[in-house]
Length: 134
Ligand code: ZN
Image (cartoon, rainbow, N blue to C red; front, side, top):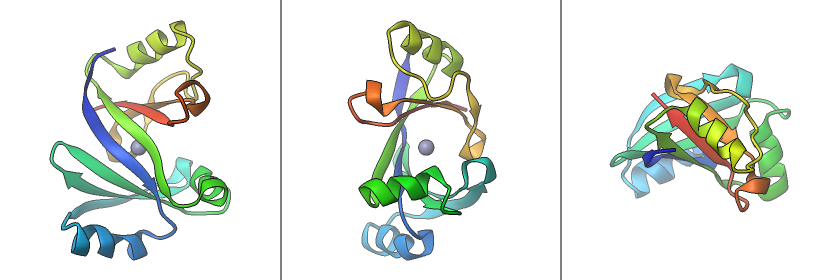
């Protein structure tokens, strides 16, 4: 697979409203989009950092995977997302062929209308890894 850059870092927060003052007033970043992804039970906020982004993830209900993550590990870095240049479907096939456990067998739509898919952290040295493309 061909990765061009880190597309974003996903960070789990209890509340976007409470988290934004740190990112905007202390770090000086600017939130340009807030969006709820219903099927993932998550509200997201995006801030640009050069070519990459920070994606804040707030659970919208207790069954959200983000709520479960926070319960288990606390708030903080949740996943790393790489921008794939030659297609997420190809990258998934390649990863699977190399013995990596997939969470998504096929790309699906994520926030910002990206095609996304996740690799399982059990086969990626503990880092939940997202592959995405425009
Ligand atoms: Zn993400």
